[in-house]
Length: 332
Image 1: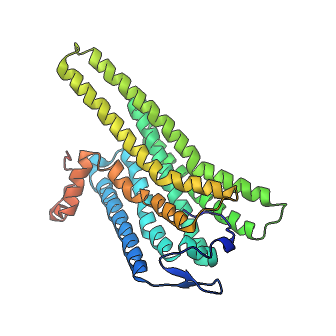
Image 2: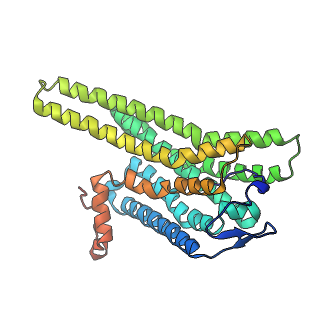
Image 3: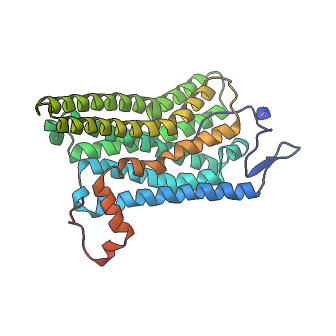
């Protein structure tokens, strides 16, 4: 994700990027080494995997009628955001890296920054909406269908995308203003950065953590209730224990992977936005790509957990859909 940070360039002249080098006149020039080629191949492979994984999710939800549910509509919106990250943000970030844009902040860097912030924020907000959907499904199952209907889901999706675009534009506007900023407007720029960080990451994270902790608590309570009403049988106890382990594992993977990908980058961004702490440029590049990789992992986390998605993927990959109409197929 793009960062609206102005570095002291005298501190970054010694930094090394696989595809750039700095000459004696402190000018950044292209350096197409073997390492650079491998760098592009590796990141290009991540882009391809991201595109293919999210395409599978999108095709599955659109094609199979069994998957036409409010929950899957949110997963579809998430897959679209992650697909666009793979199609737009990955290639632009490969070509116009943080290193390049530090020295030559041209139009393409601003375009990359707008797509970067908007699409990544959309991905995060869609994850937050999915957690809200799961909360009502697990904690309030009797009222779930009335509270999470098609109208509510469409509203959640529109709000997620609308906020994402606004946050993306605010980062870019703040960056432009900071270039010519005087002491009179520095407060506005800092406030824009704070609000952007809060609404694009920290607030969704707090919401998701609270929701998943509540879901886990309710799931454990339900499992104990089932255990108490089945005469304490050994077989039932083993089943309940398995349910608890599965719930723990699922929630741990969902939040663990998300935080592993995004938290280091946003902590680094926060520190650098509001302090003079120096962070090596290669580390920033690494954290940026780690954050972007969450768009590649989301299809595996939110789709591969479910057997009906795996069945749909097998049918798509095998080319079975070309052979006839399987829209009403029963997925197991």
